[in-house]
Amino acid sequence: MFKNIWTGNALVVKESTEAAEPDYRMHQRNEFISVVKTYSIPAMLILAAVIGLTANCNTISIFDIARITLSSVGILFCAMLIEKQLFGKSHYGDRVCSLFHHADCNSVLDGPMAKIFGISWSEIGLGYFTANILLLSLFPVSSGSVSVINWAGMLYGVWSVYYQWHVAKSWCVLCVIVQVIIWAMGITATVSHFTVPFAFDIVSALLSCIAFAICIMGVHQYTSAYVVENERVRAVQHYRALKANSAVAKVLIKGGEYYEITLHDSSIIFGNPKAKLRVTILSNPHCNPCARMHTQVERLLSMSKKEICVQYIFSSFNEMLEDSNRYLISCYMDNPKDEALCKFNLWYTKEKFDYKKIVKMNKSHIHTDVVEKEIEKHRAWRKKTSLIETPTILVNGYKLSDEYELVDLAMIENTVIEEKNILKDINGRSTTPLGAE
Image (cartoon, rainbow, N blue to C red; front, top):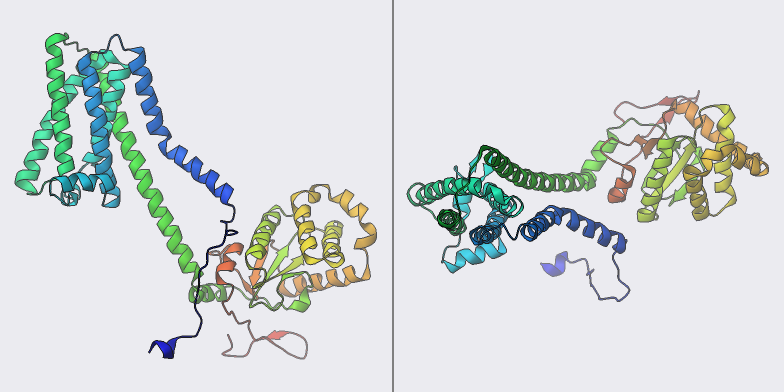
C-alpha cells in the first residue's frame, strides 16, 4: 500500500552551520522585553519588601520575620496552585502531590466552591500572602491589624479542610499545605502578642484591609489578563489558519467585486508576471495609506517574489500632481526592478514630501513618449472601472476582502483564483453570459 501511494519524494533535514532564524536579534530583544514585563511586578514587590526589612530592622519583631518567611513559602505553593488552575498541571506542584501519593488536585480546583465572586481561592491566597509581606516589612505598625486578618484566615482553613473531607471527598495536597501555613501564621501571631503588646487602631486596620484587597484584586487581574491574552493568541492562530486555507480564501476573494484587469493595462509589474496570483494596486503617490501599503508590498515580495505578481496603477488628486505618477513610472522604466522598488520606497518614505524638487530634477526623464504611453494606459483603466479610492487592491481582478491584508497573500500564493470570462460586444462594452461566474 505504501509503495502504491508514495510519490517518491522524501523530506530530509540536515544540520547546517549557516542556518539561522530570520531577524533573530530582533526576536531575542522582543522576548527579553516580554520577560522583563512579565516579571517586573514580582521583582518590584520583592525589592519593596527587602527595602522595608532593611529600613525597619530595629522595629520588626522576630515573630513578624517568621510570618514573612511563612508568607514567602505560601506564595510558592499558591503560585503552583495558580499554575495548575491556568494550565491544568504544574511541574513542581505535581511533584509535591506525588510525594503524598496523590496525583490529582484538579477535582478540587475545578469544583463549584473553587471561586468566590469569580476570584479563585488560589488568587486570594497569593494576594493574601503578598499583602502580609508588604505590610509587615513596610508598615510594621500594622502588625496588630495583620494579626486579626491572620486569625480570620484560620477560620477559612477550617472550612477548606471540612469541605475537602466531607463535601468534595477529595483532597488537594497543595491546598492543605497552604492551610497549614495559614494556621502556622495565625499561631505565630498569637504567640507574638504574649511578648509584644497588641496594638490595634482603626486607621492601620483600614489601610491593612485596603492593602489586602489591592493585592488580591491585582493578582486576579494579572491572571485574568494572562488568560485573555492566551485566548487572544489562540483565536488569532485559528483565524490565520482559516485564512490560509485555500478553499476559504477562494470563496472570500471571489466574493468581492470584480474589475477586469490584464497585464496590458499596466507595465509596472514586480515579481513573477506568470504567477497564479496577480495583485493589482491602485495607488496615489501622495496618499499616506498608499505609502503604508507599499511597505506591505515590499514584505510580500520578499516572502513570495517568485509566486506573486504585483501590478501598480497610478492615480492622482489632480492633474497638477500627475508629474509624480510620471516620475515613478520613469523610475520603473529606467532601472532594474529591484532598484525601481527601492526608488518607490524612497519616494513613499521621503521624497513625496519634497515632490516639486524631485520632479524638477528629473524633468527630462518623466516627459517622454514611453512614460506618456504608460500613463495613458493607467488613465484609460481608471476610466473603464470608475475606481477612485486609493489604495484599492485587486487579486486576479477581485477586490481584496477585508479579512485579508496584503501580506496574508503569501499564505495562499498557490491558490488558483480564476478570473471572470468577460466578453466584449462590438461596441467594446463588457457583457457577462448567463451562468458565467
